[in-house]
Length: 101
Image 1 (cartoon, helix red, strand yellow):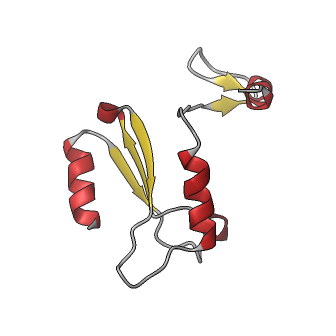
Image 2 (cartoon, helix red, strand yellow):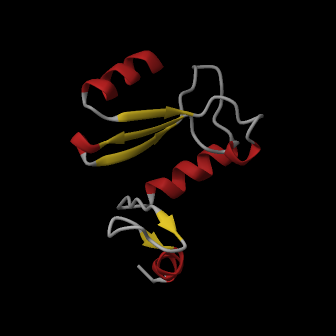
């Protein structure tokens, strides 16, 4: 399953990141298996891969439900003081995060 997805993402010039060991990084325990960045499709995707027998965890289900409510994807490089116009200051980022949608 994952190999076919990896090949497809590469063919579309995207990137795929696989969370393998949440036991090593416990803060990732509820993050679904795959983060896919697909600029050709204008999308970022979280996907949890499961065999027929295994169940999704409550934490994974909650993260996927939160992601499903998001309509847009934003990316930032945050520094205390931006080096150029592609970066955002820490203060500006906090202000942006606090804005109502």
